[in-house]
Image 1 (tube, one colour):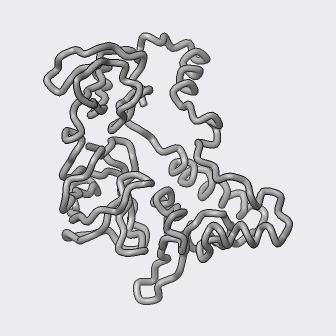
Image 2 (cartoon, helix red, strand yellow; image 1 turned 45 degrees about the vertical axis):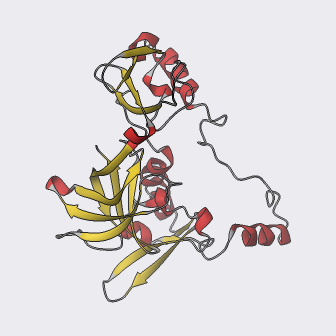
Length: 273
């Protein structure tokens, strides 16, 4: 957050804990596979010789956006038993089996920030580590650089945010960017949030081999974002240049970008700029 990015703890957890340490633990006890409750599907494609990651049957609960970091070996050893069910069907099955949490409300929060207040979590971390709160404070400026107010820390803001700015304005203002070098939060009109594309780094190709020429795909830039038509082009150092057919709102550095062909997950990476 202090670097002006908005991270995705759930994706990082999948990459480094659930499908890394968990698989290592399973191997240690002689288990060939692991199973998780993600709404996703995996299948082996004979022609390509690759494991494919596909959306869950219940698209409203699909969780493939958080799984773009998985490797072939991990996919080959993972079972997604809920992938072919809708959420209501899973609840009915759980209830018929007497599972105590059959009607438990869906969790929408980060598991280690149970109240959803990640900014307070970071503030507590600062205090624990002895980091002065002033380190994150700075100015709120418009797109021309005019100072409109001050803020308590860049970790309280993310691209596209409207609430919590605490500045008076004649029209709605939104966070356009956070600048880690100057600790400034840049705000502007809704139209300023539109972007024609971005560069993705650390791209992981899941169901297909790395691209060598431009390809068409649908791209999600956050979990609740409707996939948008785009052209993917290979760039230097394994990066991918994404160009949308229509500009998209609030392309956020640090968030994941996942590439789809229908229900097939081609791969994904991290939004760089």
